[in-house]
Image (cartoon, rainbow, N blue to C red):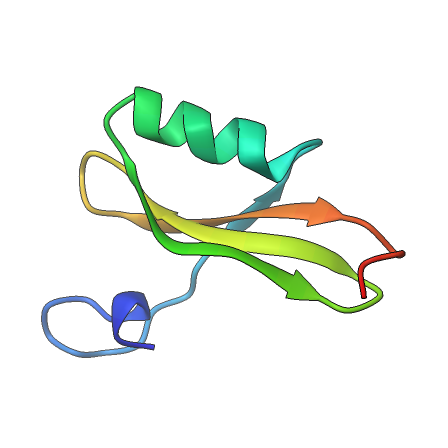
Length: 70
């Protein structure tokens, strides 16, 4: 994914944090000036993940576990 590379096009490690409700936390990211760059995606039997960018341009993931995700 292009969003996971810096301006020099070199891949980077993206840290992800676990949250209780992904929609709630993507909303908080946007409320505080960040943006959701990859919307909520389902990972079957694992949960949900979204990727965001903070106000300094750093990409990070948020993850909501949900083993019933199909």
